[in-house]
Amino acid sequence: MSTMESTQPDQRAFGWSDLLSPAAFIALAWSLGQIVFAIWPQIDTLAQRGLHVAFAVSLAFAMLARQTSSRATHALWLTAALMAIAPGIYIAWNAAFLMSERIPGLDPVAVPDYVLGLLLIALLFVVGKAYLGWGLTIFAAAFIVYFFAGPYLPGVFAHRYSGLESFIDSQFLSQQGLFGVPIGVSVSTVFYFILFAAIYDVYGGGRLIIDLALTLTGRRIGGPAKAAVASSGLLGSVSGSAVANVMSTGIFTIPLMRRSGYDPRFAGAVEAAASTGAQLVPPVMGAAAFIMADFLQLPYQTIVFAAILPAGAYFIALLIMVDLEARRRGARPEQGAVQAGIGKVVIERGHLLVPLLWLAYRIVAGYPVEGAAIEACAVTVVVGTLRGATRQTPIAIVEGLVVSAQRAVTVALPCALAGIAVAVISFTGLGTKFTSFMVTVAAGQIPLLLVLTMVSSLVLGAGMPTTSAYIMAAILLAPSLASLGIEPLVAHFFIFYFAILSMVTPPVALAAYAAASITGASASETGWRAFSLSLPGFVIPFAAVVHPGLLLIGSPLDAVWAMTNVVMGFLAIAAATIGWLFRPLPASARGTFLAAGICSVLPGLVSTLVCFAIIAGLCAWALQTRAPRIEKAAR
Image (cartoon, one colour):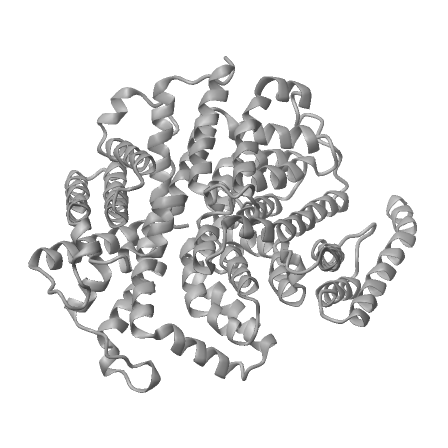
């Protein structure tokens, strides 16, 4: 598991003296700076983005220094943290000139531009490797190599845009490269949702969601697993990180699943699959969703509405799977899983639902999403302070500010690295060339192109944060889908889903590895089990291409028909995955269920009705033959 995903804030009590720590001090300064940006949005955009990247790199180095036991390494990391601030201050100081007076490509690049630009990029790669692993850093480095090697390459992928001056000009002195669209979304939108999640957790919102999920499902068959699905879906929607969600909710839900008799691999897989799918749940769907809205130039609420049915279908499938697994194992309701009734939970902390409802209302109503997140933070503080059970001290709120900045590092670093690649693709024309290449390889056939896009998205997402994986795939792959007539929103959702599902796709399945660290089971086996539970998620993108109504494109009847196709198919896929429906299923029945479930989303009324008939017939057969099997087992 990458350092980025595993790094968590200290769990001990936070005190005022902790602010003397360089990491805490930088984190607090960054959060306060973001609040200043929200209060005075007229601050130059380039200044905001430059300081955002500088704070992220500086804080990352300070957090590395805190983790090392070597004095020399500690001093080295703190020196790097201090040096990282200088380029940000330089950009902020010169932002007005760079944005309104300097002409990119014509005005010369000064010596300080070279020194500070190369310094920031070098520091970003060093800390990126430490936090993100080799995957994204090598990927971004490959684009830098391509930038300089372009004039010497043969064939269609050659280009003439090269040279150190052009590189610094595009990467450091403009709203491209380091300070391009990915960082723009991080600084103006994502940070404020991370801040809301941290403040909401300070007041006990996360614990409330888990308790509500347990009270609603805990006393039912497979209740703890269903609670894991529900709570991870809700909490992960706010946090936007699959691995962070596993580590926050999994420590509660996985032990409950184990006590209920679930295999450790299955328990970890459920948590990983639910936490990964949480990034698909409106109204907050992680940083990549905000970037999608920016790419498509659509209101964010359009993305939110489009995600409702697919997210619902995915979690319906997960709930069916955990229920079937519980019944297959003969599990009974876990009587000790719930200590309090739903009434007591609502009376004690139900008021903390108000910030979530306010956030959802403001986003759906079309209010700017960053403003909605800031308002939700304020509502959380006000509502939480009204009740003694949730009232917090000033130092707890300060801790929330520190934690939010620490978590924001995991978004800002990959966005900055992805920005380097985005600028290279833009300035060299690589995107157009890659689109032509993909269409040629697929011979103009949409099904083959979809499969190639799926594989490419999963490969790009291997070991990468969802945001970075989506950005790369959206730039390189989405145009090829659009070129063959696929609706742009559908094309981007197709890529978005597979960028997310890479978190549970072996051999690099970070969410599953995080869950395995809690269960103690094999990471590889947990990863493959999580992959099998996430199979419905692999069907949804293809279903959206065939049935755009699934994304609420078209008439209400289209949406109902699409949802019917998908849910019926997921019932069959769930039975095939678990191997049980009223009775143990033989391999032939599982294979037939799987094939019928996948084919049920194919276009054409006849094929759909045939698949429905096969699924209904298999369900009837399983129901009719369950009694003899049970009696035989009893004897």
